Length: 185
Image (tube, rainbow, N blue to C red; front, side):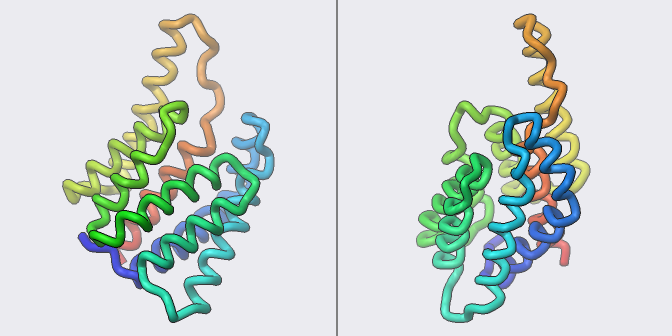
C-alpha cells in the first residue's frame, strides 16, 4: 500500500487521539523509567504535528514526514527522539517510494539495538504490514510475545523480571494500531 499525504495526516490524527486518551497511563509507565512526562511530551509533539498537517497545504508527504521528525526531535524526551529519527528515515525513503512497508522498514532500521524490544516489535509488525496482515490481534500478540521473551531472558539470566512495560513498547503498539485504523477508514 502506498502512503498518501491524506492517509499520513489521518494516521497522525488517530495516533494523537490515542495518546490523549492514554496520557496518564503513559506518564505512569514513564515514571518507572525516570520519564514521568513521557505521555505529556508525546502529546505535545503530536498536537504540533496535527496542527501543522491541518493548517498547511503547501507540503507533500516527504516534507510532512520531515516536519514530523523535526517536531518529535525538538521534544526533550528519549521516546520522541527515537520517533524523530524514525520519521526522518521515513522522510528520506519517501523520496523514492511511498510504499508503507518500505517506509516503516527504513524507520525500523533507525531504532538502536539497545532498544531491543521496540526494534523487535517494529520488525515484526513491519513485516505484517508488508504481508497485508496487520490487525489489532496481531499487534497485541506481538507486544505480548516480545514482552514475554524479555521476561524469559530475565529469568534465564537471573535478572529481575520486567515488572513494568516500557512506554516505547506501548506507544509502538499505538502507532501500528493507528496505522491499521487509518487503512480501515
